[in-house]
Image (tube, rainbow over all chains, first blue to last red; front, side, top):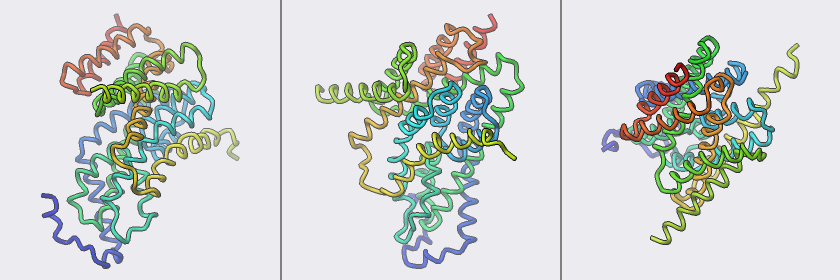
Length: 255
Length: 111
């Protein structure tokens, strides 16, 4: 169906001479598409929680804004904010962030075939790669097939910028609310993050190992904290994640 | 005139946040292909990422940041449990679940 709306798709050499106004228009189309996406509201809500967390742990608003721009992955941002805020060693923070980010690699890899034309340079894919997160990934799969191939990278960058702006707005709102609200309401704001992350993770679970990983992680982490084991987040991921995968393999073999 | 101490958090952000996170995105751009969608390795990677996130969630509830720490742990745990129950009851609506969890937290703290 979407292919029928691509009368101008031209796979010949002319795509190399893309006029700059064409990519500007595609970029703006992407920004507009982000505003009408349901993800914008979800992002604002998520980043209100992240912003409140950043304030409570004593980070500057500029730091929060930059972290949204540079990291652009709410889970990794919650990890770095809560771990640094609780005084975890830097190496532990970096390890936990990187373990949480491995999942981005297959997301980027699966998105590239939609973006790449025969003459696309690798450096043109750096920005769409950086924007790749759940929001951009899902909406790209939905929207890109309708966009002519030579406009897709600019469109994807526009989409990413629009979503990132929503994240920045949400973060700033949460940060300033946490700075001005009474303690009880600030606590409620901070509680947005565990609640929304738990349920959106549960929703994204595809198979048995995903569900078990969620359940095991919830149990293993407090245990490691109680036992005061170093690198507890990394171990939670490796132990609970591997155990979940193990059960998944055994279950599949037995069936 | 900016003292180095003011820039330190930003350096940490780049070294412990930006680089370890974007490394995988850039590897994806460079590798580009050859990572099968449902390979066993990816199932494990996803399980580890989910477990780690679950660990972060549990830690915020059990060892919370300052404002949240003013609410007793029993109420925090009850709130997240009730929120998840409401999410399941409302046919996996994240919105309903978050609302229910927040309601239990605030009402529990006031009473």
